[in-house]
Length: 249
Image (cartoon, rainbow, N blue to C red):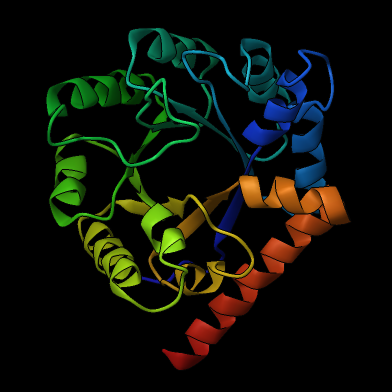
């Protein structure tokens, strides 16, 4: 089923990355979030990593209370992170994998290998009234296991699609197939990682995908055109792809 409006959530992690380069106060990811909301973002995403390499506790405290749109907290399946989420009670938590040595998230959750722990975290969050999404690779078994774990949504990892250069091919086929399967199972479908204005179109055109989480390319583009314009460019590329997909359906 095609969502009428595909949501754009801006990940502000890399604003915090720039700030942490000098351990100062600027640029503020909270201020960036407010600018993104005014420019047309439907929500804000931030990943509080266990090593606190970019987003800090004070950032998520502020985002959870000050966001005027919708706040999506990304966090690992760890007791500390689940405890923070339960205290802050954001509308949505997206459970993601974490490896200390990685620069950015390199793949989806290993739901098959850690189903008990993932399911336990999902239950704790849902019992508190928090919507839960799982960040997963576009793999049929993992989609089915996500449903069994009780998740409300999945976020399909688009990294392989981006690395392949975007456009048609096996990576896009996997996203299309898993988005349809997840929707048929009653899961909401999100996507993100490595998306930019040049490659977002085919993913945005997948009818079952309701939400895209995009950060690095927007923050990078903002250096040259400013943050509001970078958000508007991405919003425009998504909307154009959505209209094109609707016309060809």
